[in-house]
Image (cartoon, rainbow, N blue to C red):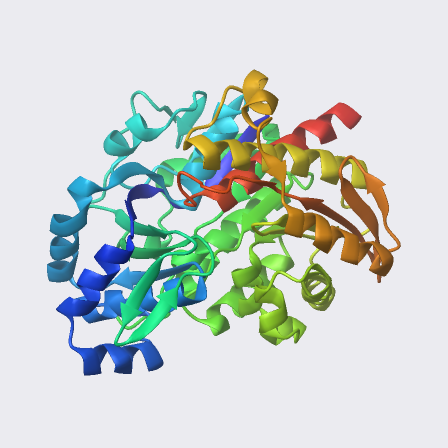
Length: 447
């Protein structure tokens, strides 16, 4: 398979946030200021109290989140405190997805080479990667030498800490990201990637796109996100014009504002073939589907199905792939796919994600099944799949349930669970890109 991949890549500094560390951070900030920011969230980071507010909120809820750092001084503080104690890894939705697809057997993955590729290249395990038309061994493109570091604070289920006399118990593992990045926030597209993709799009089997969630509501020059989004959106439209059969999948990501998320989802739905997201990102689209957010956040499969179908129906989108901790779900319109293709591709995706969660590394493809043989299917995922069976008049198929809901076909598959993951970072990107790769392969086999 030959795949185009845009737009964001960076370096992740992954740090395990313990009870002791979050307690130390709480003690370092003013209590009154922290309480104010917990109740009136800044959603951006300029000081330590901003960071602690974000950590406390997301650890209390067990949800994932990402806030942007808008202070050079605080970035230097954060780097000094955590960078040398962190696991430095490949980051960025595009970077992770390109690496997964290349590692798991794609013939060629063409990346949009932004940031310090010289520093990023050693973090990639996959071969057959082309950076904007150049060999990965030769490419080194950097914008003013700027650092692009996303500080990823992993936290574990059951972590307990005191918050001004109240015990907080983290309900589930997740991560909070503090991002310092002025390249991906611009949704930078290199000239080389533009030219290479235009010249070779007719020979490509698919495209997987991400990074729209890095856009900012406003920029220092007073402009908004629209112009930057439209440049990328125009590129996708051009690809479709040149190669109408090119499948384009977009990973949505979590946006700074619901307004941005809904607007960009609506625009993309008329161009791309499928959009992937997790339950938090589906909540962000509540304006489109009207399903209570608490039911979606609880990963109630029936509520999630209803929300996905409403989003697709209202926008004309042909397919949504929803990934949660306990199950994956695909809803698709007639002609967009088939139950066999969906379940088999999701099976491959959840195995890759489970293997990565258990070890922090991707196995060789020939060893994939062995690498997850000691892990079990999610019990909650199996319960949710069972609840859906009557709703969609579903039949069991290859470990999943397939049926119909309104005008859409539906497939749901319990995930494979690693109870003590090495890291939760990149699991959504891993499952999505591996699923897309296998989906492309199965489509080619059908021809």
